[in-house]
Length: 198
Picture (cartoon, rainbow, N blue to C red):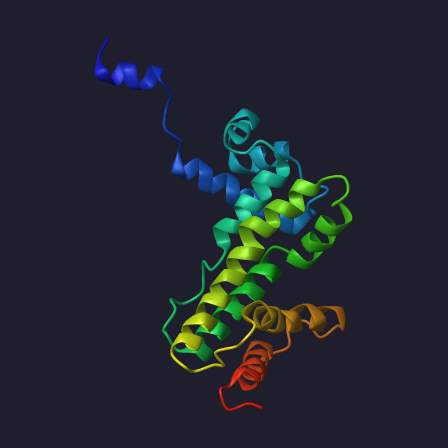
């Protein structure tokens, strides 16, 4: 048997094009149908693949959906520059754009409602999107602390929550999408973290 035949018999490598099509279709269906109404059959049809192709890659709808969300995290954000204010604003603006693109607030509501019945959905959402985003923000703040630009005794996790909180609060108050919210949030947090702040 030739080397090529042996390679084929051992299984073909995953197709990056199929992966991308499945993830893109999952995001489009999430936006148009919502998590509860979208199905893996619909994703497979939209991606032009078989349902078994989807299952070879992702075993559950929660697994697929959170992988799709992970794939677009920080996709459109500019690279970090080392300027603490600009970098924090860029991360927050990319976060807001991603949430809006995939109807993320509705998804968050679904995750909370389904927590008792589908706990892995919220767990995967945290692991693949929430915690990595928080880590990006925390990393910028920790670099600023090490450079002496923010207080050495800052509570980084509390600061990260303070940066993200206005997005959710504005949405609940009917003020979602308010221009300049990210700059305002960053300026408030940096003012509180200033080494000269009392």
